[in-house]
Image 1 (cartoon, helix red, strand yellow):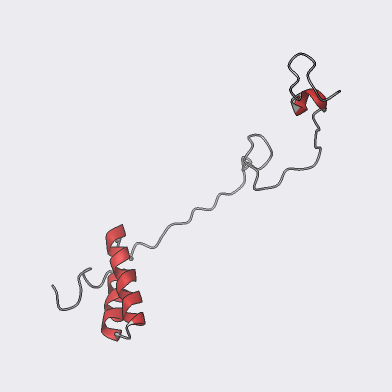
Image 2: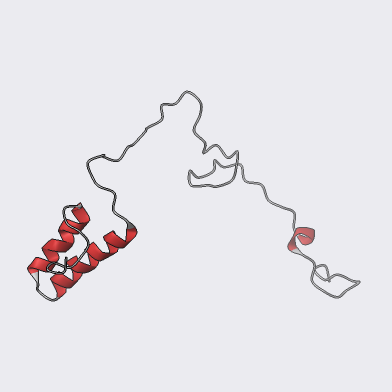
Amino acid sequence: MSGINAQTGAPKPPSETVEPTRSDTVPQQGSTQPGDGSTVHEGQPQRVVEAPAEQPHLSFKEQVIGVAQKTRGTVLNKPELKEHGQQVLEGRAPATKPGHE
């Protein structure tokens, strides 16, 4: 009865039964543990990526309307609605249905 606690009759937790193991291998890059070597070292060049400024910022609602119009135009074979949805996503048209402005 090495795995059973004599006082309570319940099984012992694994940490009391088995010694913890230690890994000496290098951690993977996707690891989230602090101090595992996946941090950027000082002196390495950092890349800064900026989004182009010419694209207008659309609200989430406008994006949803644009994608919905594009999808509906495709499914219902209405090229004018599909084109209007694309224009909304590009910021060239308001997010209202064509003809309902």
